[in-house]
Length: 156
Image (cartoon, rainbow, N blue to C red; front, side, top):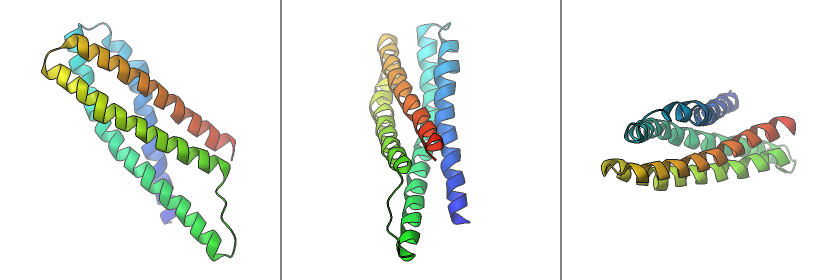
């Protein structure tokens, strides 16, 4: 029962994270392009601030639940007298997931901080430049996230 609940939390957190990236990248950002730069930068700063709080929680849930599930399977294998060799798709999922968390950390704690400073200083050109960097890194994380889902499902 605990394993199923953690797997559900793991998947829901991934849905929030990947779904939010899809929404921001393909729907919110293009819709803001019609706005004047100061309005666009402020709007994206506010929206991303809310989203990044949710992603921070999601990343913690994904990491904790993933480690717990791997640990539980490993423990049960050892207790049954079997060796534990983590499946390749789990290894890939874990490694890429940690990479995604590291990229998110860069986005949230470096780039988004710079965006906040640009908004506070009303430096809209700098804010636009930072938003372009955030977009690039979000695109990379989105591609990695989709790859993880595909690898996990196709290699099962």
